[in-house]
Image (tube, rainbow, N blue to C red; front, side, top):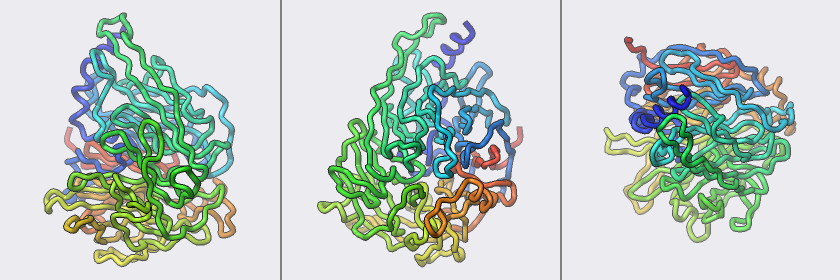
Length: 538
């Protein structure tokens, strides 16, 4: 009876209180993958010198290959039977979903996702295994829809290594009420679980792990509704659609975010390094526009320059596209393995010939050679500087030497760094104008923007993706080469370093960053979560 009463209380109150917090509900902050913590006001370039490590939390977990912890989701002002909380939701490689109190640093609830099918054991570094894809919940420009109607509930979703997608209550992580659905083949390597404003969910399979075809997998979810009278149960149960897929016949969708969803929720954008399709032909860092419901190709852009070859069992450089609005139109930021950034009109990605972007930069990094890992990685970030004429900024993570000359260079970025552009919209078509490059950062994660700051983490991993003869590294070899991760906060307008975590972390990172409600979070391979922010009196 207590459980059902809790359901009623949470259902009645949660949708009214989660809308106001500066949350982080998915990879790169929102379904558009723009990397911008738009509601964040506590951390700024002006007070960045006050930022420090506030705490670290070590989870009980055994890493699986290179996988340990996902980047957490951050949800503020959520109400449960113990009052208001700011919760973090972190996935562990062993299949636990752990809810921690972000303020008080304790584990509130832990849910173990039992395997429904036996998962093959892999010793490959590229296909390490375990739960590795960050969770997702409604957020960003997707409205905080919890089902509609009386008694609607707040959920988040987690994809386990057996390919089952679980719906979980935000208040306590319960996953027993709504049956899980089989979304991808068992043992798949997945990236970028995403959700649209119409409650469709998408995940990309990459690297062909355990024989899974690379591509995009999707399922629609219909929320349950529940009477707010204890003991009455559901008035309408949850429903999953039959899962659908779009296969690339080659590499998967690039980057940490899989695909980006436009603000209307009716179109998806993703980059495919290699493969072949009926509409776009041979893929070569091709940006596809897919219908969000049918997964059919509506439009595409393929760069005209030759691209470096790909090799089976070796990681491929690439970044998930980001979507932002400019003068009433949605534009897409993408990149290719030749080191160029592209600005694409979302309604005509490559013009009539599918090879003509709205704008293309010169290469910011030399094309990859000898499996050195050069390229644009993970995801982009963008930000509008309202204090300076609503100037639009775009940021990218580069592995390998930065070759483009930036007027605001902060030193020689020989191993990698963050590069920044402004968007000039004064002409008939917008242009990306080089602004600054950061100091040297080893294998930086995808950038995120917070109150005029740009955050990235030196993952500590070698930028190399294989030995010079193309032989993949083992997990042990990668761990031996790795350095401790370091968080960097940069001034978004100049690239000057305003904060570094120094030697706080003791091992490398693979999970990316989270920002929300006045804090930045980093997870590392030794199962540790770090919270950075400005101390507050309590």
